[in-house]
Length: 493
Image (cartoon, rainbow, N blue to C red):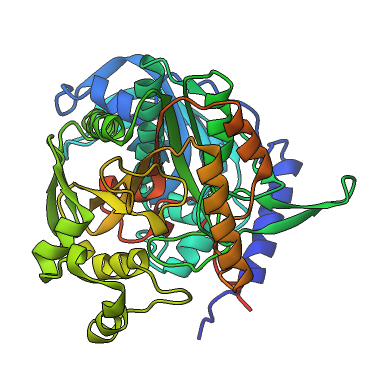
């Protein structure tokens, strides 16, 4: 009875094959190959070929061998590049006996280049009739058993290279991701925004309420933090006279991992002098509709069973009104003496100091957020949960802030930026007190940022959009790990 070969045996046999090829003067790890077409383009150009008809142009393609079917002196195989897959046909009397013998030493997973003429087979499949081929890279490891349509998420995330080989749909996600990022840049560049880079390692983490990662610089003899946001540095640039700036890059937060959270994630942040949260709503709507239409060709998206329509205008509703519509609770009528009663009645999870802002935020998350399927701007947030936002003129208990929700998921966050240095310092001091009381996600005091504000920052609108979550929506992905090439995972041990 035959036993299954171990991985070690398979690899050992592969290395023996490689050494044999070298003895025959064949380089198993070849050099560059001049392709005349990507596979998708080649198929498209020859889509009108009739059965039995042969093209006149000699073509060259390259890719990974994905299937192999030998029939005596002829071999059919499938070769795949990033754009698609095509059948190739190798015949002994066409390539010559020695070359045909060499092909018998090529297996699924190997990478090769082929040249020949295109024809359409009797079954209607466009095929390359190979005249010459070159082994470009011999694979040492065999593709895993049942590699086609690889489903094991642990293997897929830990060995993304296998996932990309096995699942063309995964490749499409990351091609689409690249198009989204490029479309964002095109939109903002065309509106005279300046793309900039700010420090990833920062002496003081700021711009968000989050727990940072800490590292140490030996030469400077100081601790540094991986940034949790780009906000405070970008607003320094507004102070410096760069009136429209943006940054697309990674932020890092030492927090939990879930289907919507990864410790390393990509954000777009943009700031525009002389704007406010109303102008940020407009630019958010215009930016996202531009990107979605450019990448998907339309403004309707199907996500996890919900049909989402991004056609503007999107719904706009204040946080208080949204809570009242869904739960019947009128936040304006709730007094401080009612706080404990509200927390108990609605089973709210509030840690630390109890205030109206925290209660409002918890009620919103519990009752309203699950209902926000279509794009919805929620605006006018409580001051207590918005330490970097400007207060409303007519109600200083609220700030000029909005968040965009789609399919019950926060996608964007924006403010009219606070530019009063004394008020900003007061709010930082409140945050420091919360941190000293044990809330490790509260803001640090950033004296240099206060000093920058003292030189004068014009009225400014600021916006942040979570790129990973946007990609999730546009690719119908149910987990953030599906749209990050190498997500953070627990160690195997």
